[in-house]
Image 1: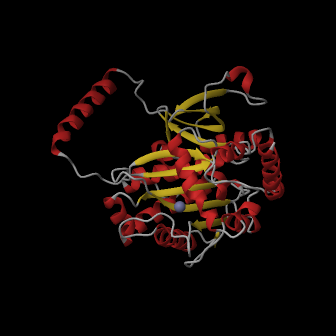
Image 2: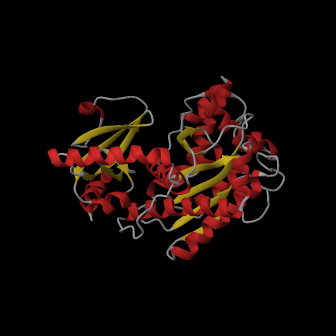
Image 3: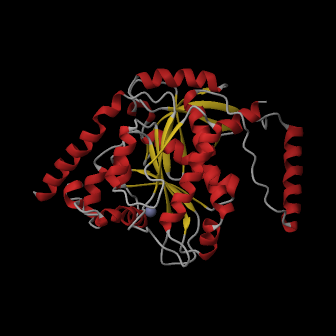
Length: 384
Ligand SMILES: [Zn+2]
């Protein structure tokens, strides 16, 4: 009985936050809230020489600075810009009051093993492994330092698995867009900053559940890994991470607004390993041979409108209302549903507006080269 009561209270509580959200128009991305995790009496996780709250703040301020310097139409709001404690619900409240188009929360990870390495970006959802639940538990534990946490979060207990079942009943209205931004961040980390890609994941984060806009939580690396700790403590490392988040934000903004991405992403050059040079040459020969014998190796570039993601395969014929020309692709164990194959971003963008007018309010355009999901900038570079 107590559980049911908690569920009802929590749902009502979240709705009191989210009600106004459905009228907000996200076609222009010009207000972003950047949230440096922890602060003040809450150091977050700690490494041998580091505190999460300090690294998160340094990166957050750098991201904001890059946005201010390069995207003059965007207003940046911070949940904190100094070393102070801010309650999790307050952070969401700041974003909701600012009517932000995006909420980006910045954190660092740690586990007992010093070997774990890499970045991961989280969206609000149901955890699919005990490991994923642990990350959410750790981040939500900040509320234990808040004075009235049991009252403020309607008896949510960050350590009880039951509480997370309740939380997972609250479906985010902005799942697709959050996912789109999260994927852009991971792609930047991997391709431009050479970080180990641990992927986009889902779990119940309190700071995300109360926000009324697409929102992500970024774990920028493990302070428990000495090498990664050194990287995250360095000015250069923080600059790299911040610029990757900035570029992901910019690309996402341009994708949503239907603008051209001016800068074409260049992959970071990995030092050449002489053992691999031969392999590469063999591949080149194979590609040339294929080109000579057939023209089916021509690069195929197309754009579609992604409108749904499911954890298991569904029947395309009867699962989606009012969307035609549906096809599916699989990425990291998730099934993603796309409508249409267009030769230009512009055409896909037109179709996106039609789909958004129907049931799928947060549909967005995705780009493919030879069946591989790529960024819009990469696809457009191939078209040139
Ligand atoms: Zn954290």
